[in-house]
Image (cartoon, helix red, strand yellow):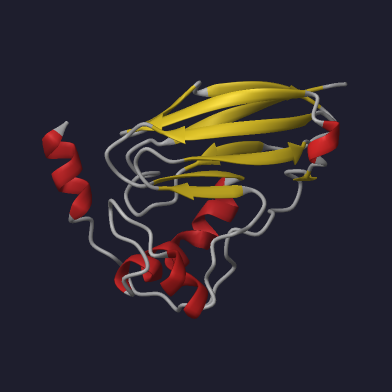
Length: 168
């Protein structure tokens, strides 16, 4: 485990502009849900380099409150999206590392605000070790949705999960 953490701390960062597509909702993944109309709560635990559970079953139109906790030693993200949306967000996450807005163990929210990269999209939480957060999300009638950690090197190490979308 220690060697994995050490290796990830030195993942090379590719160049990228500070402005980018961000975490914003990808097409076809649903929309922010109404916290007063939650159908159920799903707890997600993150560690190096996995989610528990690794998949979640939802029905079309269902509103889920995800309670996400970072039980790992590194910062992690829970981002609802698609492989395309995660790839589009890669440069921005690398820029956040390069510009000192985050490192493998800490997030500088003040610096993120100053740089216009608040990381406050409704489909994503970025958590330091020991932190927890929530996302309330309503799922679409159809589409492909998953969750992943876009911290540089984490998705590449296999940190992703599936949302199995069923008919209502």
